[in-house]
Length: 451
Image (cartoon, rainbow, N blue to C red; front, side, top):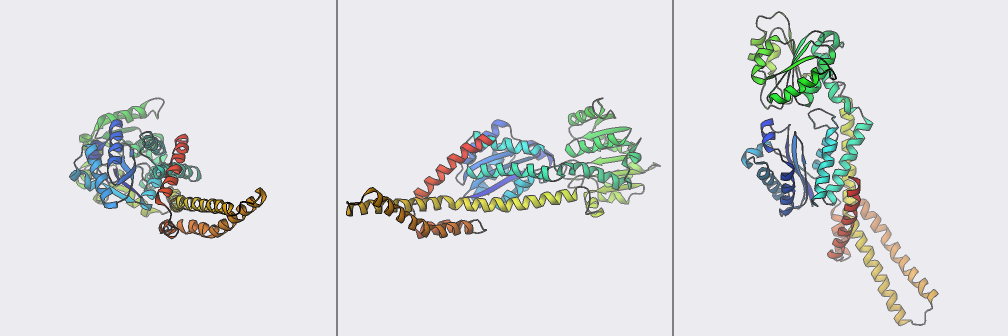
């Protein structure tokens, strides 16, 4: 069996698709039940947030698994398969592990390093456990993902990466390190009301801008953000919300614009920017934090306009405030993926080793019983000595191969050693399966206590 994840997120799909594909709690339960009813899947759980929907499963066939999971996501999301498929991504085995660990560390979030995703991963595991759809593999995987995410936050400054990106972007935009002096008294337009846009708005407010206008496709979200910013307990800046259709008008009045939406197309065209600055005497500063870009790259050629985007931030300095932390977290993820893979491969052979030793113990017991029948005059001391001697011989003969096979099995491509051991010693497949089931039941009890 192998790990497979099929999903879509803010990186692969437009907001309109994500909103339509959103899964209610009862729908997630039905999705998991149908996943386990599907032939290729033995385990399953779903990670559903406002920015991603991912279905994780342990499958025995890759292509059949991808087809089945994609179909199930389409059926339960209400988005047709033909329409949904272009936005789906697929990760398999080690790449699936790497993906979840990266998600847990906040590397795949709209705001890099955000910690909310850890709670959502915990909820996804709890749901799989409650529905009895998460078995040994997914229990181990999600538990380890939680530990990796916590390690990334405790050992690095990834928590500050999102904030650092906004600050670094504003510094590049202003071409100064004293953003507060540059921003003081300016009118700001923030396009988008998601995590990164909210962070940018709060940063601008603290930097001393005189007014912030929030434009968003969903006006209610923009209004909530504006209310938070303008409350006495918030930043206290003058803030109000407008609909997206008003962006053109607001652009003519703004001094600085920050855009970070989930749109897959341009939010501000070069023509719109050129129209907005026509006849004005003050420069217009544009910061595009979206990926893909919100603002037409051609805007930087418009006189009186300065544009900074994600690409130019990367080119400006490899030592941007977030770069070192992100690189460090990526290193943690790579190390943890390798360790998880080795542990899983080693665990795969454990039931076979246990079954082998069980068979050896049965052989010893049968041979000692046969010896007692042939030598009925043995006293208890003699019988115990003979039994102990036979056991030591068997243990010594099995020690080196069982230790070595565990070492070999933990290496990439080592899964075949379990099959070789079963074949060489003619082990009963049902005995091996029984050991696996017993281990799984024990692990399930322990994992339920940890979540």
